Length: 170
Image 1: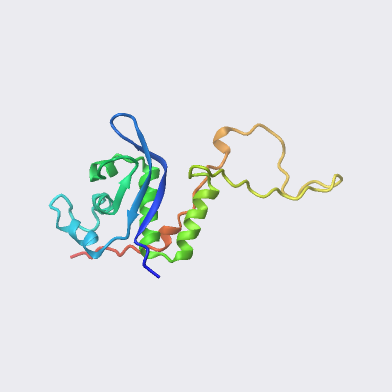
Image 2: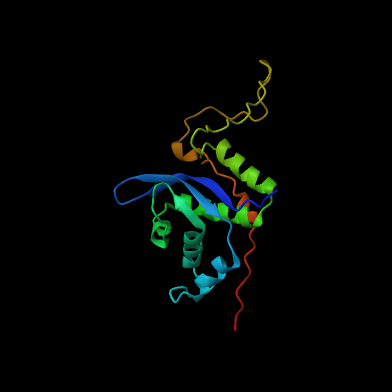
């Protein structure tokens, strides 16, 4: 049995390059200690709380993205917020999660329809009420504004596996 060190992913939206090409499929490898420590030596990184640290670490571990010849921090900075959040969660689950957490993360993406070839899994239908009795959760009929609909929220299982330590005050 060998250790799996590379994981394929598909971004929810995709990186749009200068020519307008969309890149969604990629490969991320497991991070090494050097991947997390080396960026802290970068003079453009102010410290472990610098938000740019995430960008630099992801640029080191994302080995490929679509047909880009190389993935740079500039490319990671150009991702849509949803894609950056996805990569952060993906990083967390492959580096700090269990196989079960990884499988649940991928299954959640398929269930939400975030991956190509997957459609959102419909919510189970409530059992039909008897004709003579109103449903227990019946709501008075009326117009529903588009803003009233709850947005679909993707589960973020990778977040639970990452613990942020508070910075020490001196």
